[in-house]
Length: 134
Image 1 (cartoon, rainbow, N blue to C red):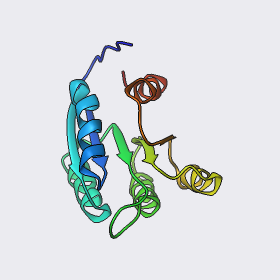
Image 2 (image 1 turned 45 degrees about the horizontal axis):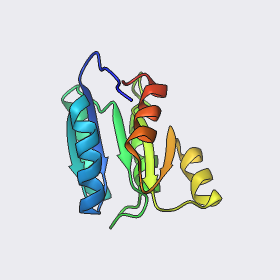
Image 3 (image 1 turned 60 degrees about the horizontal axis):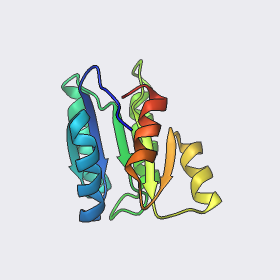
């Protein structure tokens, strides 16, 4: 499956597992700029910096089980910050948690999509295609 990108996509990967982070970077770096954070607090710092620079993230891949703030808390904080904007980042929760409760909590918090690890490149690219990002 080969998708073409019209403009460079700006992505934030929030993942504390180095192997999972590397996999996501390898998949997504061909579509634009990627930044990574291994903790929720750092993710919010990068998000705020991008907003202040007038270059918000198009996509955020967000793990749920993180040190410090968990993915649900980060998701809610991002959506609160975006309330004053005219656009929202697409947020994909990417996690090993496959419970219905976790899924419902993510969507209630404002997630755009939810993928269970291990993430397959084809599944991730299909989600990006649905969002119109690739």
